[in-house]
Image 1 (tube, one colour):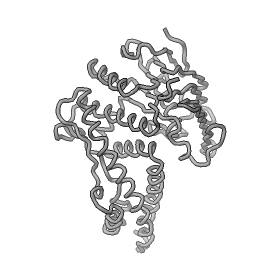
Image 2: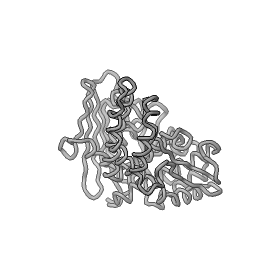
Image 3: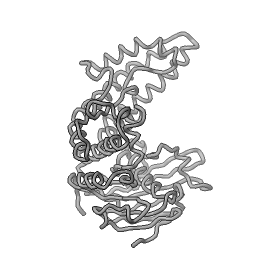
Image 4: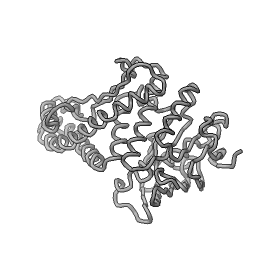
Length: 371
């Protein structure tokens, strides 16, 4: 195989979404899956992506991924990227238990497995990265950086744990009047939050030129920019600045029962010709920006792992004109397009650049050969 690409050789699913039993061998180049809406195309991509992030890309709870009437689900994949990696994930409704096995051994912590089979998923729903609220863009930032930096992942987990405990303490302080229970979590929030802010700011600064270049190459006229908005990103001592803000806001936070300062309140600002794309961008401009973000995500994974991630394409060109679709595929190929799994409703929706992919049809969660 080409060792510069991740190759998912096998994927299996039991009682996952609408798959009762699925065993799939994938060619090194990938596959094109053809099927009507509601037959399981996106479920297949979701299952493959689950092997990387250990949760649903669509935000569903694990219990909601279990096929109706089943006791749990199991998915597994074997990937090759110079060395083989096998990941198996089982979830039981009884007790809501999840077990992850990597290369034959049970993982003690999910963080050990996070990112084991790198993949990037392109979908029409990605427009929410631009048109949606700040939480969509924070989730994007956190995912990209957690997948490529163990330090960021550890800091993110610690920050979220301290934030949950401070918020719980704030609600208790409202009844007791003693704010020390909330204050005790502020040093941890300041320490870990400062690391998150620094790494986010550095990533955005490094990737800003790529965002502008990709947007222009896809077809946008005018300067595209990506900016990280944070109250403490420009402070010389971000930890001290955040600690001061938490102390200053504490009484206000107690009244509201939530923490108002920190990286969980930050945002990415995406602009075209100086105008906020979320507010003023057309649907086409927002979609272009979202695709550029996904391409940058893929480039970040590739640089961190030295292998091109699997590309999961969920009918991503459905609402784009042919010219933009061709430019996007051209850019992906220039960057070293890896194994590709494309799902579309009709064979005629397969772009010319991907016509060589082997084809399968899907109906009611069952895959069949296709010409």
